[in-house]
Length: 360
Ligand code: MRU
Figure 1 (cartoon, helix red, strand yellow):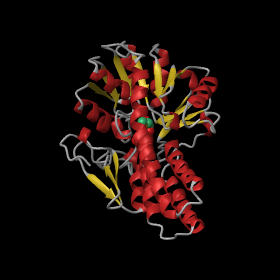
Figure 2: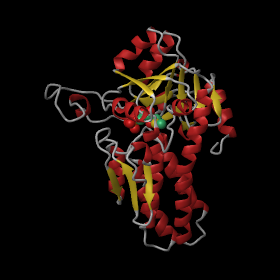
Figure 3: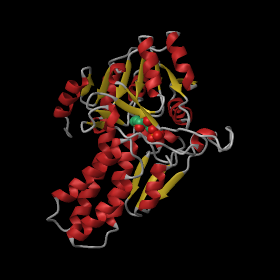
Figure 4: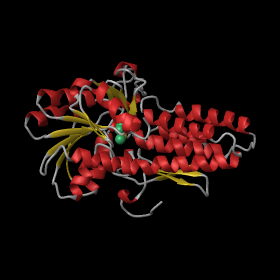
């Protein structure tokens, strides 16, 4: 872990193999405090994912891959069947931390496939192969995001106003982020974007994380409340919307942070192109439409209390707190992947992109 002063010098998720620890930045403390957590047990890793100390679809995938590797390392048995039984128990447990972002189960399934492919080898060798796979998942995230950034950048021009929702940035991935990758690459090339960042109620990932990381990297950020995005689009200040995603169904319907579909509806109304940045690992062809995607519901206190636990709603009030929503495919102008941009009809274009991909 690089001990630089800027948050941008830290990795979002790292493995300290020697000490058997998953090392993360506690994202619930940002932007005011850079606190590094060292997680050893499966329960600590499960809690960190559930509590959003590490969050964002790609970062959850990387955390789960390293997490299951650490769990596997602790299994004492040299007998494959006994090892695999324990492995599966740990896998199911980690998989239960959050339901919507497919990257969690995607990464765990990839790790399980390593066990299956190597089942005739000694358990010691399987553990080495698991480490290699987890590192590959982490390393690929960087190149995938950069590639998506290039495709995303081809959709905009210098001086454009861009809008994003939630945090699909470096903190949600390993580097560059997904929706922010075109912004970071554009900044490297002097594009001079103005970036409108939705604060993203209830947990303020936009205000606390996206505004923070983009501002820290020297980009021009304008923080707005979620209910202002239609207004800034109507004013003509936004040339394109870029958002991340937690799961894309076969027909292009996309689950992302609650409020994304509201921004997409406004974008459609005001003729602003709306792009979803989706690594192919986030496309789930088993979900025919967005109706099949499980939407996580979180505790009502996230709505009744402000971030720092100050009560703002009456005691005993009923709440409904879905963490994600589904944006219908007809509101999405294009889905930017590391293999190119998919356009409607998505049932065809996503299939084609996946056929070319590593994981198709
Ligand atoms: O609840 P969170 O903070 O994990 O939600 C994150 C999002 O919705 C992101 O937009 C999504 O995971 C994509 S991250 C590249």
